[in-house]
Image (cartoon, rainbow, N blue to C red; front, side, top):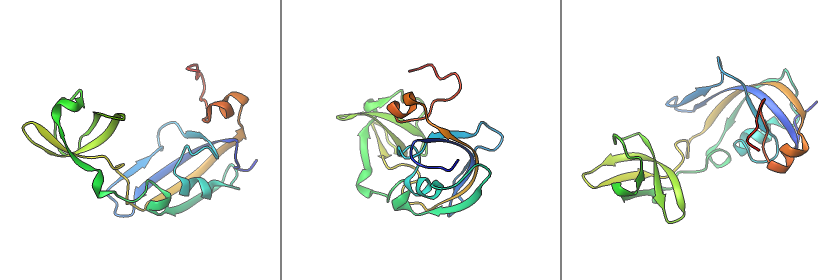
Length: 160
């Protein structure tokens, strides 16, 4: 069975940015499972998955515009510490959640001041070319419930 819209795909992956400053892997952990065609993974990887089958392994380079988007320098803002949810120990590089006028958003601390923090609201991988190494383990038809919810359900997924 080939990867196409409405199929649930299980895979192992390794991803790194082109500069080598970020790496993540499912190696030694549970494989990742997603519903294809519903924007559950970065668009550049999803388009490369189409037509692949279980047992296929491949490498793909995904440009920022097909990954997490370009960096937006206007997404760096100074915010009063009182707007952070559970501020804890503040340090540059730490991810925090911020109460904003449009709800809670995740950001990365750039600089800590006495009353304010400089935050980067860009995704940490925005502006980066991503190098994926993928092995497809399984492809199956999605259930009606998965299609209705727009994502794959794992074993024992009882939250719906």
